[in-house]
Every structure is written in C-alpha cells, then in structure tokens.
Amino acid sequence: MDSTILIAIFAVFIVSIIFSMFGQGGGSLYTPILFLLGYATLTSISTSLVLNLITALAASIVYYRSNLIDIQFALWFVPGICIGAFLGGVAAAYINPVLLMWLFVIFLIGAGGRMIYTYWEKSAPEGSCPVTFSLWMYALIVLFSFVVGIISGLLGIGGGILIVPFLIFLCRYPTKNSAGVVSFVVIFSSLFGVFGHLTSGGFNIPLIIGTVIAVVIGATIGARSMVKISSGYIKAGFGIILWVFALQLILKLLQSH
Image (cartoon, rainbow, N blue to C red; front, side):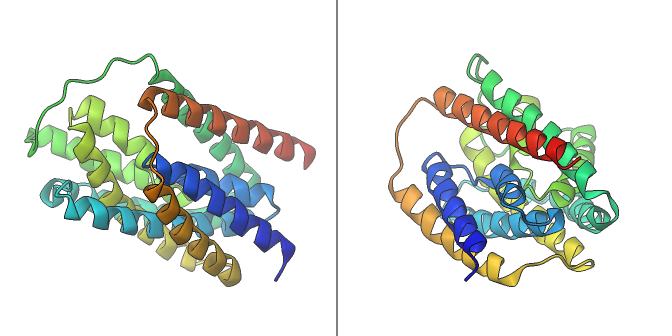
C-alpha cells in the first residue's frame, strides 16, 4: 500500500478520535489534510464528503435513538441542501482547483473565527421542541440550506459548522436538539455532494476504503472516551486548529506559484 495512503489513514483516524470526543465530525479538516498530503483537489473533496456521510449516518442513529431528531423540521432543509450540494459537486470540476482551495482557506479562517468567538459569546435563549416558525422563516431555511449545499459540494464539508449557529442563534433552536438535526441534514448534503462529484470522477477507491475504516474505528474509540471539558475551550481550540490548517494551505498555495 502506498505510504501516502497510510499517512492519510492515520491522520484521519487521529482526527476522528479527537473530534468525536467532543461530538464533532472533523469534516472541516479532511479536505485540507488530504490536499496537504498531495492528493488532487477533487479527490480530497470527494473523499471528505464520503467521510462526512459515514460520520453523519453513525451520529444520526445515536441521536435518533435518543429522540433528539425532529424529522419533520429537519426535512425543511433537505430539498435545498440536496439540490445545492449536487450543483456544487458538479461545479467543482469546472472551477480552478487553486481557486477552490483559496475558497477553502477563506472558509477555514471564517469558521475558525466563529468558533473562537463563541468562547466569549453569551448563550442564546433555549427553547423547547418542537419549535414552530412563520412562513417566511421556513422560506429562509430553504434558501439558506441551498447556499450551504453549494458550499458543501464545492468544498467537501458537511455544512454542520454553518447550520449549527443558524439553528441556535437565528432559529432559537435548542442546542441539544440542533446536533441531531444537523447530523440528519449532513447525510443529505454529503450524499448529494458525492452524487455531484460522480459526474466528473476524482474518486480514489483505496483511499476512500482505508479512510472510511479509520473514521468508523476512530469515531467509536473517541465516543467511548468522551472527555468533559468546558465547551468554550473546546470550540476555541478547534478554531485555532482550523486557523493552523488555513495557514498551512496558504503556504502550500503560495509555494505552488
């Protein structure tokens, strides 16, 4: 087996353990890790989407059994995110790979800043489920999910890091229930992003098989090794990690010119 694949499998394994300890999927890091290891942009993105899909499926089963997924509400996100993710996956093949990675750098910087900011941010008022919304809010949800779907398909992220703050701070959705909704929605964003990428290829089957096995094992270990640390410290730490990867991507992109 190629040594690069072994390194990729090990890196994904470690990320899945660490992130699953804190209820995170690690999708924001799979694409930059694979790209930094030398894999083609489309290969990195498509593999990341597959890993997001597996992680979201596993998480959704747990949340569903815990009665933390409001399926009726979550389905409002599905049409927009499916169409957007498919279009984003198709469009990725027609966009300059360097531009795609610069877009990912912007995403990492923004997402990292958002997570670090939560350390000082006051908690939003908690409601209870089910939550009812006005017609315009449901329309906003469909539009928002479409935009998130495009970003997901283009960059190989599940979109959860964008959906969670939307649910908690704009929809005033209960935090513990938002994780269940997001895991369910990410199944569709990842799946239809994969469908979009199938139109142009870019799949590395040995890499996908190896990293999927690593994610399943790593997430299981991480979930059973759940640690109790202040959520503020966790989010700030993840934010810094995202910034570090953004810096590494910038350096690699600058060196390629």
